[in-house]
Length: 230
Image: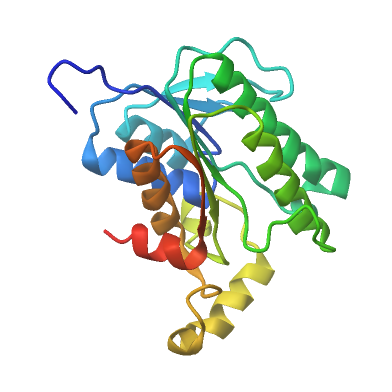
């Protein structure tokens, strides 16, 4: 950054999740000289409130992400919104979060001046997938790609590793058992599908935002592991 350039303004969505809270931790550690807004659906408390304070992030509380107000001026947007069908309660409710809400936030940020977007998708995302989860993720990727960002980075991580309970999040039994089963076999699992620490995804995407590489870049899990190394 040159002495005369203004710090880029950052909007975060999805800060209550593993990747979002990991990103807050990275921002707190590095104290990057940039204004940060965190878009939330409810007032933060507990661990999340503390993490936001440490990252010096201002909050913008919007209970309904389908009815977003005019955003403050922003340059970069980081979206890590996501749920599971089990938590959401239905396929329709899952789609509202993982597709509709992501598209709405990205569109509102674009209208507020954002030129760079980093968004979390999933391994196997494709509009042609026969798996509902992966198909919705693929639809989300196509939706945000059509918004005209100068720089778009899409992360497709494998199974996320992280301590949800310590962050005050619901523990996902399937995820917990999968991590237990794969941990002893880490060295034998290809990097493309090996479980990945949420922090690595956050670091890789933050670096992508800072670099501002033009066009659309998709980072599969192996690339996220490399580029997210501290």
